Image (cartoon, rainbow, N blue to C red):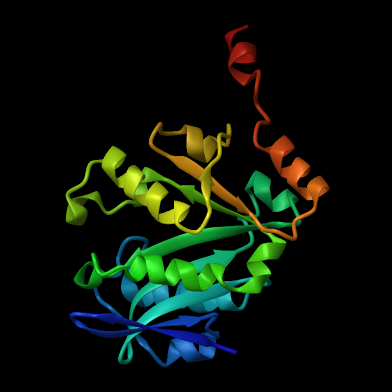
Length: 208
């Protein structure tokens, strides 16, 4: 069942909805400024595919019949180290159209997603890579953008989490953040902790 929250803005009412089935998303249009990851029509197809995945969830910000923002949750990528953990879900992407920014929509869509009780059964991670950040439209440098993201995700209990994951270490601005649900067992938490660093001596070995 789709949950809905009304988010009032000076530009009009936004409906925060989710988790949304693909059939519902198919009836809506994508705002033409949702281009951070791929063109809007291709991104809509990607969102629909996520709804068809095990554990895949999409939350959207909707104005009338148009999607103006979204957040995705799904299992980690098959080539990621985190896929080996049975209790890890990835917050794969969050995007708000530049037409609708600075209206607290990102905060509302995050709050709605994390209000889902199923989140308490998982460790939720987000892999924030700076090459996806919209520094051009926001006019923020990567460090200021990182700070904004960390504050945003921190509002739902996510914390910076050190790791030697190659996707994170590829650039010093990249960051892994994580939140452990209340129902996650101690053994699952310890497994996650053991997975954070897998190449501790990699640099030393490469020097020999």
